[in-house]
Length: 169
Image 1 (cartoon, rainbow, N blue to C red):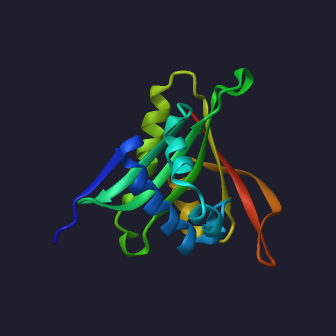
Image 2: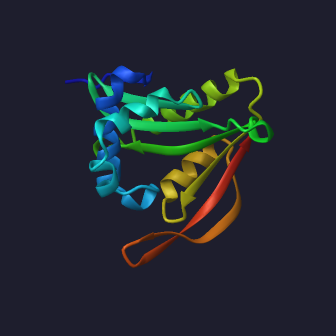
Image 3: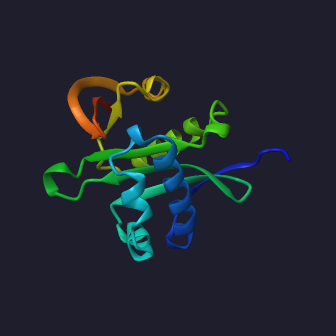
């Protein structure tokens, strides 16, 4: 069957698809995310639904036909002094769909959504240093490395360093 990729801004009715792709992400790339598979898998469904009540957060889901294959999350700061900031918290595409431009579509969706908010002047993110394809993707879209966080994340007994990246709008 030919692939039919659609990027959709998720709503409350998509919470199950979001949960499915998020758990896939946490299972297959645990070093790329702040929460663990175990924490998320044990989360009550009510908590999964709550993500969609937050008006300062947008979830984009990539679908191949009706199958969720990717996800990205952007949060918009609500504190008055930081309302000009957006923060990408998540970007993931299932392994079998990588290399097909889906991450590009997810990043474009975030950037377009962010530009529609006239007050947003900067998008920022953290990325694990070992995630070279992700770093290259972000650079392709104008993000620059502006700092490094040593031992930012610990999984089991291994520490991971992260880059801070930003894109001014």
